[in-house]
Image (tube, rainbow, N blue to C red; front, side, top):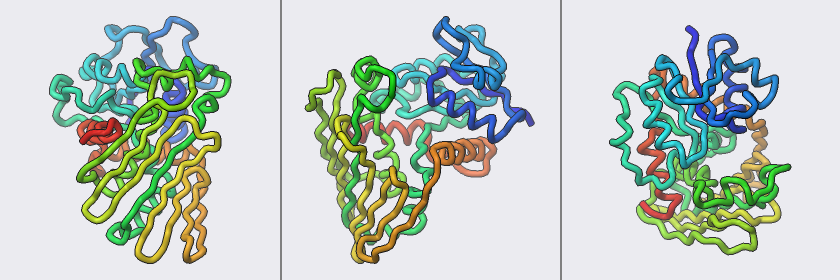
Length: 311
């Protein structure tokens, strides 16, 4: 069976998905692209050979796609889904799903029998999967998470001040840019009972979006602390689990688990395409009814509300 797929938006994440889809499925997928710009048709020759057709307006888009990937800027996701809900059976939406998590989902006219899945790739990393499968969370009393990095270093060759991350009106801000952390927290521990947050702009970065977000979440049997920022000079992405018998460090950059008391190190190295491909395979298992949709629009909106500091 050949699946017909369309991407709305062709940024770096769309390009990665296209290459990974072709690597996984080869000629079993036919890929089109809908672009808003009128410039060069595609990013490069390698990508061009993977794409069948390029469209520049919604009206010309066919209505028989198996899947549409919504990979344009976050602020456009809601309106895009309204426009293309008749053009495909199933939908893969990049994170964050929308801008606030309080959008009116009923106005989207979601179709019964269709899958609307929101990306959450960190769930599929080796380190998060190891924690999910091997840690008894009933014995975890405190969790500390941090994602700290320097925004000007994120996109080499591009002025950080011109990126969406720097501009609040484009949906930028560390609180939702790094929504991955809230996603894996909820994936591992479920939703908290209550949350306290501080979200603001504190550094000298030339941006108008928030550059620091600090949260404390309460569960029935534990607290979770989360720190996010755009101004850390040394990149850190870690989770500490304090249990009744050890202190466990989960390093998402070094891709390793460290049991400090046992003096045990578990290396779980992989490249980014590895877990991105695992997520794509999981998505197609969902639409093939081999498993349930574990990150629907409703679930992703709840995670987004937490990132925004509300329930």
